[in-house]
Amino acid sequence: MKYQIMRVICMFDLPMDTSKEKRQYRIFRKELVRNGFEMLQYSVYYRTVPNRSAGKKYISNLKDFLPEHGEVRLFNITDKQFDDTVLLVGSKSHQEKIVGAKELVII
Image (cartoon, rainbow, N blue to C red; front, side, top):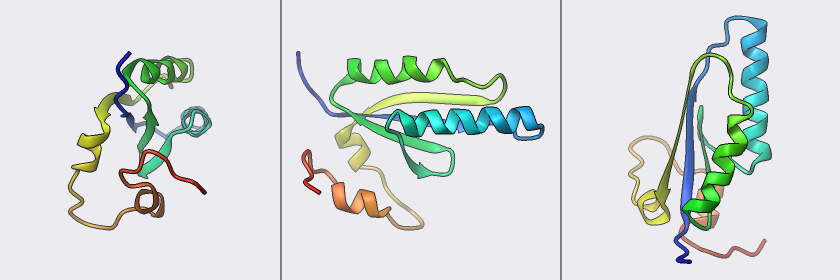
């Protein structure tokens, strides 16, 4: 099996008009974090995985916690593609600065 480090990116836009929708939002976001996703921007989370098949596991995990309304999009990109993103305004998070393109980080 060929290992190519990937990033699973989750983008979502969820309504928060009613208390039920707010609750579903909180549950979904907590499950993202519980599954190892980190916030890149508001409503954009990512997780590093060793390969595409490992990413499928996390996608199926999140399907159990999808809210009734709104939009949730997941896609996979290679680590190289992620590193080639251009940041136009703002700055990289502390986590991005530490990890960068390193495959192993000792804390």
